[in-house]
Structure formats: C-alpha cells, structure tokens
Length: 315
Image (cartoon, rainbow, N blue to C red; front, side, top):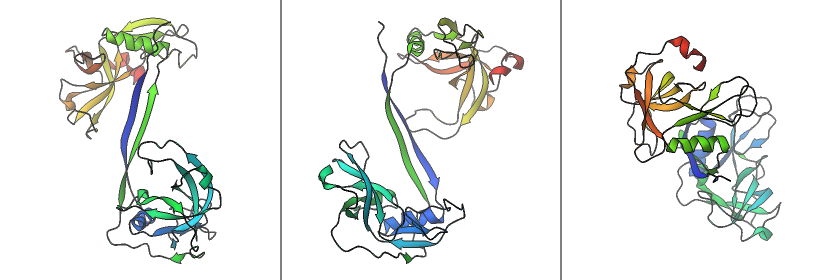
C-alpha cells in the first residue's frame, strides 16, 4: 500500500469591516463597560443588537442599556480550550440573557467544572482590564449571587467620545489535509518537476489537478496524462494588497493558466514581465522553486500569443 500523504495547513486572514451606528455604539459601549441593546418592532430588546428587525426587516435604532448581570439559558462544557479562546483553562460556553434583554448573548463562563454550571444560574460580566471596543472587552462571565439588575432597560443615545467605527477580526482555520489517490499522484509528480492530470474515460477531458472523478460526467478517472509544462494565460488579476507572510512585492499578477494538453486552467503567479503587460493569451512556462516541489511562478516563453479560439472554453 502506498504511503498516505498528509500535511498541516492553515488558512488565515484578517477580516476588516466598518460599523454602522448600532454596532458602533454596542462595541464602543463595551469599551466603556456599558452593554447596549436595541428594541425591536415588537418591543423585544435584542442583545447583541442588530441593525434590522429579524421579523419585519425594518431598520432599528432605539438603543437601550441593559444590566451586566443575567441568567444562563443553556451551556456546554469546553474541557480543552484552543488558541485565542477567551480562557486558557477549561470553561463553559454559555448563552446569557442579561437582565433587561429579551435575547441571549454567547460568551465564556469561568467555572471550576461542569458540576458548577447549570441552566438558570445567575452570572455577571467580568470586564477585561484593557478594553478597545470589541467583544473581547467582556473577558468572560462569572457566577453571581447578588441582586438582579433592572428588568426594564434604560434609554441610551448611543453617543460616546471617540466611537469605534471599524474592526479587524482575525479568521484562522487549522486543519490536516490528506489527499486522495489522484492528488497524491499529482503531488508526487511535482517532486519530479512534472505536472500530471487524469483523463475522463467518457468525455476525454484532462483535469489538472486531478480530482479522481470527472466533474462533468461524474465517472471515476484513472488514466494519467502528463501536461505542459508550457501553457496559456486565460484570465488574470492584478494584486495590489500585500498578503501577510508573503514575500512578494505588489503589484503582481495572479492568473488562470491552461497548461498544454489540459482541459482545466490552474492558478499561478506571473513574473518576469511588467504587471501591466500581462494579457490573455500570453504563453508562459514554469519556474520551479529552488529545493522545493512546486512551481514558484510562470514566466513568458517568448512565443506569439495564443489565438483566443484555442482557449476560449477555459476562460
């Protein structure tokens, strides 16, 4: 049996968004140790607040302040906290309906164990020592035996000094990828600086990278076909934003490249030519990474451009 390939992979990017008046007031309020909700058309106080009524779709803006104390409505124990979670010791994920609110807020509860958590228990917010205008300004919830907060929320203008107008939320996914038979053969061929695809026994199209089955006919593929190494740029984009941990100066070009003999275009970076001279139909060839088993980029071959009719089905 051939060796099973596997590799850890990370997909990570910063998600940046601007805030409207409701979300801006909510996050700025957390920075000031104030929890705001918004009153829906039916009178329900929504916490966290939303910008549009979930039933009527009307725009909402009637902000109110609710208490930092509340009641656990449901919970789940987390015995093995992961990186960047609210606490680095085991804790409970809880939905908490704050006093004065009609909906529940999801956050972490600091508790010694699952036996100390129950639906209906009273809790309060533990504020972070340093607050910046984010949901993490609530460090977590903690058990609370004191008096409940007001059941009727107080009106609030939502106005604060130096309001938060935008946030950057990091998104990250860690996983282990195990390729199947077709992809394993493709990766192993790259070690030899070859590119292989698989031909569909029905429509006879060659797919690169191979998928083990034809996406058009739905039948299994097994016949290996070596393609390239040269190919044609079918379409492209100019990248002007520098990616984190990517040592490539902007602007640069990322393109769909139809390798000779393939019926599916793959992705690749174009170099060795000014970015504003890259064009559809440009003939290119691979430049392999030194000591690595993948193509670093593609460069022009110097051949005449391919006729559009030869690649129009791959655009």
